[in-house]
Length: 122
Ligand SMILES: [Zn+2]
Ligand SMILES: [Zn+2]
Image (cartoon, rainbow, N blue to C red; front, side, top):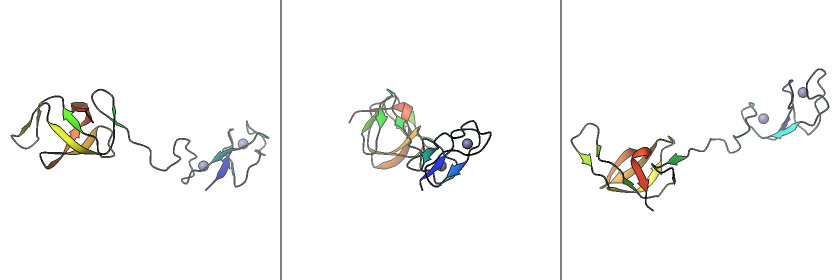
């Protein structure tokens, strides 16, 4: 819900646009700033709710759902003797909510890869 927050030291809020009237506030008589936070913390970046997770490959290219990547080094799968070879393609990657990891399918098996070990090709 839209509300208005004092930029000064009082931290006051108003439901409607107006000036701060708190005596002694560093921003008294200055316009309050519009804010749409739902949590009462008046965080600036948090317009859509969840912060955006940006996953990047070894080159710093931003990865998105549905991208295809290749491994840039041999990776041993934890808990098995399987080694994923450099150059192995993983298609239809999905972001996990963790900027360091992606979900993907390798040879039909769903696994989680570290972004630093892949390179986007499509
Ligand atoms: Zn104020
Ligand atoms: Zn707010």
